[in-house]
Length: 488
Ligand SMILES: Cc1ncc(COP(=O)(O)O)c(C=O)c1O
Image 1 (cartoon, rainbow, N blue to C red):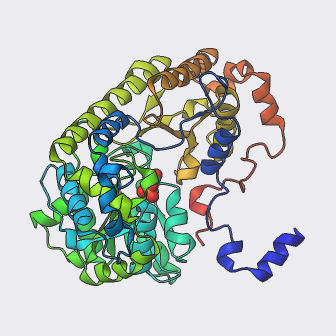
Image 2: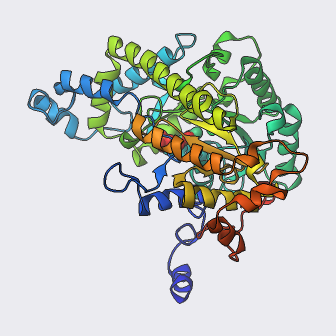
Image 3: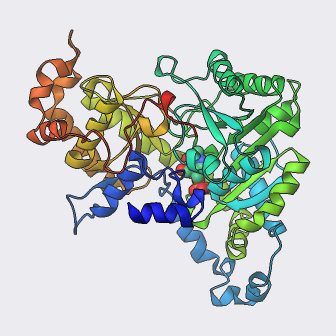
C-alpha cells in the first residue's frame, strides 16, 4: 500500500493507473492457465487454454514453405547475402515490397472485390498498435469512440489506455443475434453529447471477435451513412477477414467504398488489419492502418517509428505473400480447416450435450450460450460459473462480461489454438461436466437452478458459492453491468 502511494507520487498517471485493463477475468483466465498449463503427458489434468484467439491449424503449410524458401530468412546461408541491406536503418515507410505484398494479400482475402493501394498502408506493431495509432490520429484525450458490444477486451487497453480516449458501448443483444440497430447507435451517440464529450467515431470488428459473425453489406452501408451523416469516423478492424469459412461471404468496407453506391466522405474511413489471425502470426507483430485519408496516412506514417515491424520480418512476409500459389492454397486450406474444426466443435459435440452457440461463420472461436446454467441471470452468477469452468472443467474460456456483453451467461471459446487431441480432451471434459449436470439442460417450468441442478453440483461448487468475494476473479473489481462500468 505504502509502495503504491509512493509510486503514485513518483510515476506517471499512466504507469500507476489501471488503464491497461489487466485486472479482468479475460486476463485472469490466462493467468490460471499459466499457473497450471495442460500438457498431454506432463500435466494431463492441467488447464486447457481456450481463451486465446490463435490460428494454429495451418502451421504445417507455413513450415513447408519455410523449408522450401530458406533464402526468405536472412539467417540461413542462402539468404545471408541480404543481411546487410535488411539490417541497416530503415525509415518508417517500411519496405515497399512488404506494403505491396500486404495490399495484394488483402485483395486476395476479399476475392478481388476490392483493391488496396500500398501507398495507403502504414505499419504498426500488430493490430494492437494499429488501433492505438488510429485513435491517436483521430481523437484527443476525452473524445470517445462508439463500439458495438460484445467487443474484444483488448480495445479497452489499445484505444483508451495511453490515448485518454473513451469507449461508449453500443448495446447489441442476443434477441436479434447481436445485430447492430440504428436505435442502439443513436442512443450511444447521444451519450457523449449529453456529457459534453465529442463522439469521434464508430469502431467495428468485422468479422466480430467474440461473435464470429460478419456484417452484412446493407448493415455496412447503413453504418457508412450514419457516420457520414454525423461527420464521425468509421474504423473497421478486419483482422479476421480470411477466417470466414462459409457463406455469407466477408465484405470489407473497402468494397462498399469502391462500389460507390452510397455518397460517402472517404476521409472518414479507415481499416485496421494484421496477420495475427488470418495467417496465425501474432508473434511477428505485423499490423497496419489502411486509411483513405491522406492526412491520417501521413501522420500514422510518422507514428510508425514507434512500432515499425522489424525489417527482417517484413522481408520474410514480403517473400511469402508474393508467392501467389502458396497464398491461394493457404487461404483455401485455412478456411476448410476452420470450417471442419467449427463444425466438429459445435454440431458434433456441443450440440449433442445440449449447448447452443450463436450461429457463426468466421473467427477462431464460438460464442457459447450457458445462460441455462446460471443460478440467476446476473454477472455475479456468470463469474461463479466461470470459476467452476476453470477450477473443475479446467478449461480457460472467457466470460461475456469481459467483452462488455450486455447480458450474462455467454462465454467465448477458442477452438483453433490447439491440436486435434487436445481439442478432443477439452470436449470430453465439457461432455462429462454436462452429463453430470444434465438436468440443467432439460427445459423446466422453473429455472433449472431453482430445482434439482443446484443440488447436483459438486461440493466444490457449493464452496465457491459460499466463499465471500468468490464471485470475483482474484484480480478483478466487482464485475459491474457493463453499461454502468466507468468509462474513464
Ligand atoms: C478484434 C481484434 N483486434 C485487435 C487484436 C490484436 O491483434 P494483434 O495480435 O495483431 O495485435 C485482436 C487480438 O485478439 C482482436 O481480436
